[in-house]
Image (cartoon, rainbow, N blue to C red; front, side, top):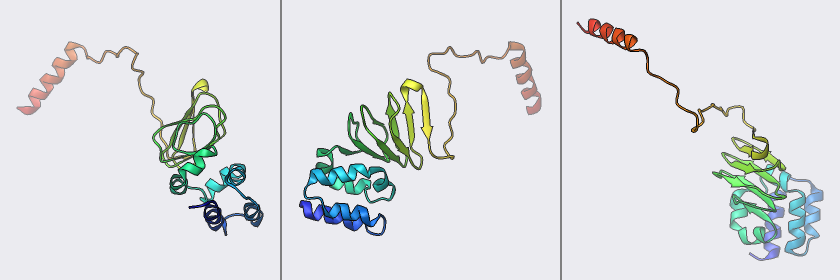
Amino acid sequence: MNFEEFKAEIIRRAKGKYSGAFIGSLNDVIDYPSLMTVIKQEFRLLVKRQILDAPFIESHKTEFNAHGIFLNENVNNGFLLAENSPIVVARGNSPVTARDSSYIVSHALKECMLHDNAIYRITSRNTVMFASDSIVFEKQRATDEPEAAVEAPRSQLQDKSSAGEAANK
């Protein structure tokens, strides 16, 4: 697909979902760098309105990656769409939009838009962010903590076994 076909496809996808001013600004672009600049300026809304989605970015991965737009990849800089991705690490200046069951990790707080069951962990703050009310967090014993004694006193064990024997008779 050449540049003009690529631009026409984005315009086609945007019609009816985005303002005429945005489509007009796309008509004025003459090359990939200027087109990608417009896309980055509107990245969050383009993803939210599904003009940019995982299949489209994947099918044009070379063009998007060359201009700092990524799908389900660990990034140091650039714009990232995480969609149904097991784990993505965002470093540097990387705005992230996360969908489905994506799990995003960064050391410091990033610009991150969460949708569906996506989870965002910020390690420096020991914080987890999420968008869905249906996500359940359960505390688990840390693996380095000693196990609590779970044996009951011998007298209780004998009493229970005696009661069990009596019930079986």
